[in-house]
Length: 278
Ligand code: 13P
Image (cartoon, rainbow, N blue to C red; front, side):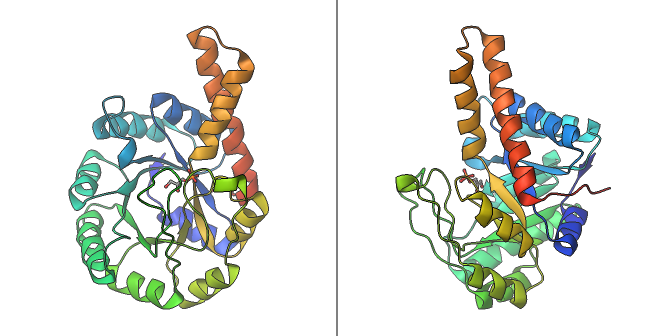
């Protein structure tokens, strides 16, 4: 069934687990992620980043295909816009039937981030859609122009959640998007997580899950993160399967992609201790 994040995050907060947000790039990704959720009987957030939209998967395609498979699923599925770059894209995604959007104004000033997020929140809430925002900044190892990590403080997280009215908040406590340089597992500031958790009740989200270490992520899930975004590891796993399969025809290749995605997502369900939500 197609849902927004509300009841999922309530249960995740009460029972100290996290729900994976699995990025997809195309229809194979959507189908594979939803199938994995159904096989495990667990809720899932399927997400597409605005930067991954293009001729192969437009926002309309993502809405049409994502909604279809989410609606038909036997478990709760959220269709989420990841890293929405403008108010306009978020509004368009909401109009098309996404049940959750992220507005990422984390590189703007605190005041501008609040104002931008509030605009999306007002539009979304009038339509039953939830909004994720980001305070502090999770840097990216994909993008040479986006390498500066800004750690989130408890004070700004609490104030931002109060002023913006966002439904969930992405915080920066040591992870980064993409493959870590030197392949080292990052150091997570669990003290920062604890103080942010103390300062606000807003559901907390962690970006840059890939390569962040299973023990780290498990502890994040137990200590107050209720959604972890995973992209890079899913597609690295898919590529590994493709190489190992020695695929020489398209159907073998596609099966290998789906197996890689499926195995990796199952692994993260275990790491995050995700529980069923009725
Ligand atoms: P990774 O690619 O590091 O898993 O990050 C995913 C993410 O945060 C998407 O928003």
